[in-house]
Amino acid sequence: MTMRIQMDAGGVGEIKADTVVIPITRRGETPKTLPQGLSALDRRMGGRLSDAIESGDFKAGAGDRLPIYGPKGGDIVRVVFLGLGDGEGIDDARLREFGGRVGREANREGRGRVALVVPPGAGLAPEKAVPLIAEGALLGAYTFDRYKSGARKNKRAPVKRLRIVTVRKVKGLAGLRAETKRAVQIAECQLEARDLSNEPPNSIYPESLAREARKMARQVGLKCSVMNVTEMEKRGMGAILAVGQGSERPPRMVVLEHGATAARKRKGTLALIGKGITFDSGGLSLKSAGGMLEMKHDMSGAAAVFGAMKAIALLDLPIHVVGLLAAAENMPSHMAYRPSDIIESASGQTIEIVNTDAEGRLVMADALDHAVKTFKPDAMIDIATLTGAAMMAFGPHATAGLGNDDGVLTELQAAGDAVGETVWPMPLLDAHTKAMRSKVADWKNSGGPSGGVSTAGAFLQGFVGDTPWVHLDIAGSGMSNIGTPLHIGGGTGVGVRMLTEWVRARSE
Image 1 (cartoon, rainbow, N blue to C red):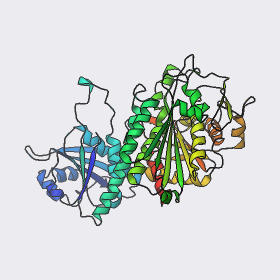
Image 2 (image 1 turned 30 degrees about the vertical axis):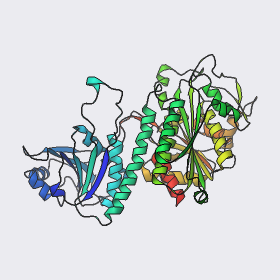
Image 3 (image 1 turned 45 degrees about the vertical axis):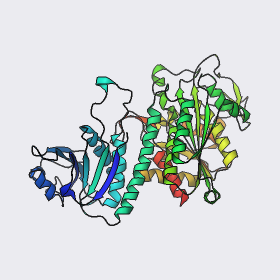
């Protein structure tokens, strides 16, 4: 269950909570005095808060933590100081990461009532800080342990509610609550994307992903249609069908649609395309055991589009948006597609199969072509865990971005910067396109070991026509086992907040 966020202003002295978290900033070496507005809370704690600050032992560096336990029999079990570092120049990233630590703190002891007090001070203006901290708290508190049982399951139930209280009254409290609710809704959609990515492949496969999409669409009012094998055959989608033919789990093409009204279409049509390889064994070009281990995350692009479309619907953004999930399972069998096969895509272009482990670009080719022909979007973004080259270049720290429209790429970079997700531009040259040309077909599905991010992008460009388009390669950023304040490991849900922000900006 996702932790709920409640936002209030004033009344800190009467706050009721088992655990109270307080951010502490510093100027110089250590904080000298307790933040303003906390004297009543300090009295309830028997003066322990001011004693802790005045001792000089708590340095308030970013990441520092000091738990202070209350008097026996008191109604506050503990207060936790969390350091924010220097009070000057606190940016969005620091506030989000601080929120992530608050979320972890809320889950640390599993106590039912947790409150965060936001004192006045540099960098902590509630209008800016509260939505970012709330967003970070949800992302940081996320866990995925639903398959653990008995003694192995976390005995501390996750905190169901976090109350954020500002020391001072806030002008425009209703507006701040609305902005915080918006941030929370989008973060919750990112958590759903994480769940989808983290689910094992015997739970999430093309058919079950389509069912989840239908269920979500009903909840938020999206239109949803799902193409089965027969329907894809009628549309000539030979690329995605080839990828899926080795598996007993047949492929699916899911189409989600928001704002299909004349008024909203006048603002334009945007398309989001997500790669949904629910498990990638590599096919007959079989991966190693280690290389296969994390391949349940190969549908993280589809998960990002799933989460973004839900967020777009919840926010009711005034623009027409379509989301496509190209779902297939890439497995070896006597029915699997082979190296040297030549397949025909929905666009009519033929593709020589050089490597069956370069399957993601094939399912995306048919999805991109369908989006262009059916919806004629004004701009189109695809997001995919596409290449090991992106993973090697950026690790989990950035997403590769390239396309045929510098303006759209700049918009995505701005959207990424706004939400803390870095998009790094990559070149798309004629040489990359030439590397993907086949001697026996229109294209080949692999251009060799060098320039992998750009050659994969050049292949996809062949299926978008003149539509303004950007490709996001999240092979590194979509999954990570490097823990951060906002992510414990596994699927990251990257792209949900960025795509939502991009659509929001385009809708204005």
